[in-house]
Image (cartoon, rainbow, N blue to C red; front, side, top):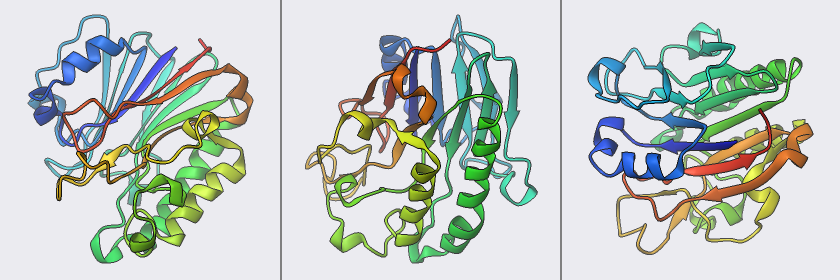
Length: 252
């Protein structure tokens, strides 16, 4: 199976910047999208052969997730089932015969770290518990914008970003907890090189200079490690301040 994840930073804008070219070229079995910033009624997105599952935020033009699939899942569930987390359209879980697929748009800790405490003490704990609970039934693949660069290799300028959102000790420990539970960071399973990023600021020609962060991931249950064939980042794909990430995995 070919699985893709992309924070599009607004699906309506991205559709005008070549989204369908990449979508058609990559021919994903499951295509996960974060930060749609839209409701389905606002978007003309008719793609033959794919079913769409949306989870939009209550606040207009904010957050939101979307999954497009070739094969209909057994069940689809939006959100974590915890009221304080569930108004921003951040999670969609799809159940298939042999695995769960979860896409997530993790809350940003924001400038001045206004949401860091919420992120560290509430969201990160509850999301990990959610996928752990799913894993009791069958293996889990989760993907999306996790809004954290896990290690110094995962951003260009680690020293100057130690207390910036996305690279705080607290957020990095949140990802440590994911790995310590047994989930595999699929890209690092194959590649331990630096300068591999998935997000670049719009300021200072950051993308041209590859001054970026790797904050978009596919993580899988350890039991699926032998099924994993490829994990890729697609920095050449424009249309958003993030680029797509993907995996190929033998599972149906």
